[in-house]
Amino acid sequence: MRNKLDLPVIADHYVAALKLAVGDFWFSHSAVGTLLLLSLSAILLTLTTFLLFSLFSYGPLWIHKICEGSRGYFHPISAGLLFAGILLAPLVLGLSILWFILISFLLFWGFYSLSEKGIVLVFLATMGISLWSLPLLLAFFTAKSPLLNLMVRNHQGDFLWSPPEVDPAGSDWRGAVINASYQTQKGNYRQAESLYQKALAEHPGSEMILNNLGNVSFYLKEYPKAVAFYRQALTASPELVSAHYNMSLAYREMLSFEEGNREYEIAQGMDAGRVESYTRKSVLFPAFPLIDGQFTRIDLWQEALMPDANHASYAEKIWQGMAGKIPLNRSPIFALLWLFALGVSPLLFERFYNASFCIICHKAICKRCQKTILSYRVCGPCGTQFKSIKRSDLALLEAEEKKIPRQLLPFFLLPGGGHLAMKRAGIGFIFLILFYLFISDLFLGEVFFSSTQWHLQSAKWIWASASIFLLYLISALDLMRIWSNESWH
Image (cartoon, rainbow, N blue to C red; front, side, top):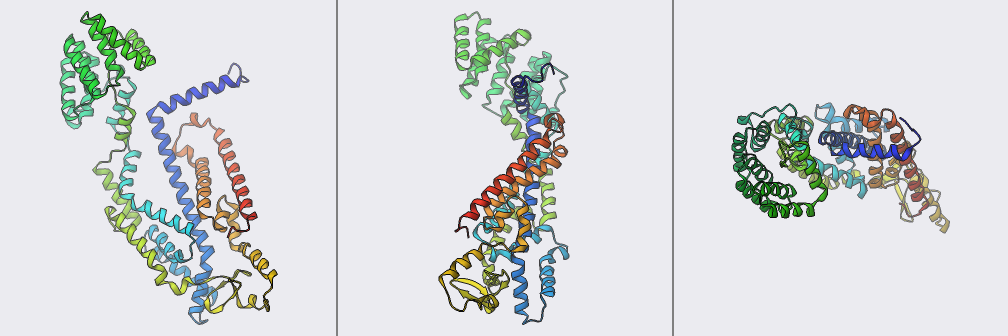
């Protein structure tokens, strides 16, 4: 505000704020949760685009086969309505959207290229692991439990302010540790020691609990006992700087200055900066000079991802809302069975999957109405223009093959859509996910993550729009590269 042109200082402040924000667990939790929701939205929109591409690409082949199979009884319009009825049958019958997606994959499987089949396999694999992922995701998005809140406070070391307590009867060793920490702050050292011993019985070998037991013994002036606990903590974690530092204070209280100085030097050799912060803390809080062990970020993330019976029950309901009455624990088997169904679908629909497009006019043709010109398939009317095969005909056919069917041209309006049309489904899928991720953040980012300070209010419109523009540019350049390569098909 004092000097708006001093960009290095401004950038330095924002970088410092970013470091503080990333170091805050709840900010990181919200950011990761937002990213997961935006990614889910992007994947669903990309899958919808892929299904529309499948319909516009391969739907005409099915319509043509229905017309030919009916011996001309069905007009192309009525055949199209019949195909639409088959495609939408799961929704008409009241089945979930998942069945509509799976039936669509089954109908188009025989026409898919290898990269398009890879997209389907990724979807099936994701559906198969939903048994493990869905309860974890529900636990993550509903993680703000009282216990986790207190664990976060313990991690941040702010127990000197409004210390609530955890009900000992309804908590495990983590609740006992939190209660013990509060009791230590209140000066109830014997009660804290009892709680730490209870936690150690449930979680033996914990360097955090052993270090804190040493601290309680120190405050009880039982210095040899404190040193013994610090030694055990170092046995469990030899790189525990706080145990060496605390031990140095215990030795000095025992007037063993040589041993105390040695432990202090060991701690300084491990992490001088941390020891300096420990010393400052001892000066600020002389009544509590020792360094308590606290929950780590790993402990917090483990608690945030720990599902319980309620999460499993809700996950079961969500899954059955998507897949019907199929139990969630059968999802891997269901995915494998559907993968088997896709594998045998070419045998079941062989007479339909042999349709293709005329290389010249791009109309749907089948074996009965196609001709082969220099290994290229053409329809009867287009084949009549090749009365005698010339060398120039090969170049003509290759040029015609590169033309994109008109019904696929709208997909070029999306980054990655053109790659789908040009049989680069893998790259196109990545471009589409990134595009929909930026679009989702643009319109849903504030809904999922309401920190306007983090978005700097309207600044998000700048970076999101710039990212979308850059994605369009990269996609267009890559399409030009593919188009200039004569072997793209």
